[in-house]
Length: 197
Image (cartoon, rainbow, N blue to C red; front, side, top):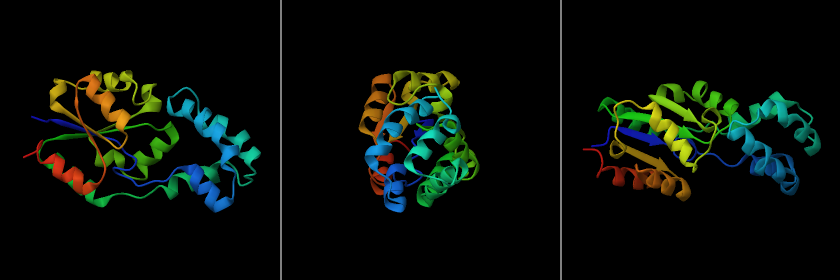
């Protein structure tokens, strides 16, 4: 019997496009110029090894952004403020049935804080986990282990994990918990029938 369901955030609860794509479209920035930041320093922030607010400003200057760090973060976070209300309603139904619903996201800490506060993730989920706070990212096995260690009186077979990235789903299965690949809300609802009565 499933007692805990762990949800990825991006593309399950929110529908977002990469920041780099938005900056190319809205401000004409060069993808080639931005790519080193998104593949390097940003990933350090996502893994909790660096602070975005400390390392981002020099890159913004190099890209030609002259509105300041706060304006960039506001652009980034608010443009991604799109909530899947059907999924949130489904999660509320699960919680009413006694199923614990958790968030497990690869995110840097400032964006995660925005999601918890402004997007109400702290109310949507019973508990939320972020790579920046865990110190490691999916699909690293330590990511799943640290969440599991935080749970009380739960067996691995009582956990179901949902993610839209194949490698994260396979890593969860390797860890020993049940896992499914998210492709659409309709597919999600159909697959959930085998887990929740």
